[in-house]
Length: 204
Image (spheres, rainbow, N blue to C red):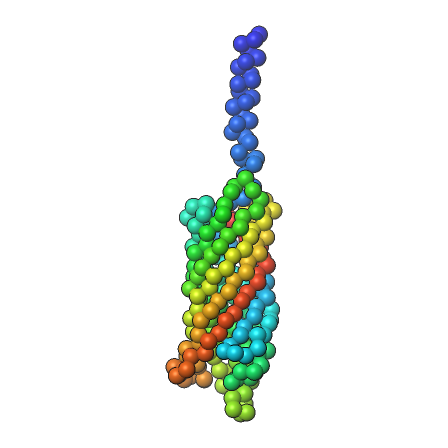
């Protein structure tokens, strides 16, 4: 009887030992990660006023292990920019290629992270006014930037999470497109932008 009870107890303890880690795992950072988000953005060109706007974006990542994740991100927003050399309706896009470091712990339902990225940034201006003259062609400013930021992911379950992200980009606009012509700016325009993103992330 005692031997049978001991055997049953051993089976029960062994089963619990395997079941507890599976039950306790609250999050994952490995494999493919897809996300969509709303964004609040800001832009400052040279010494002009900082302008704010809303937009949205998408995120695609791949976690090589628990900590390191390669990602690409696209964000777009619309601005009303004043006190610059070109007035009009501005739209801005960021295209990021970067690396994220997750402070991962699969036993927690939240994971903070930091990240850095190389960024292609473009701004298009419709109904542009240059030197008090309205342009019929859309004017687009193009340049690169470096982005750094961080955030935290709150998991509803192991696969679906709320992602809060804050990113800052600094760089220059070095080219301008007017119609079909592309011109290198003799004096590149310094520009800084920031993004606060609220979205959903999914690990399929």
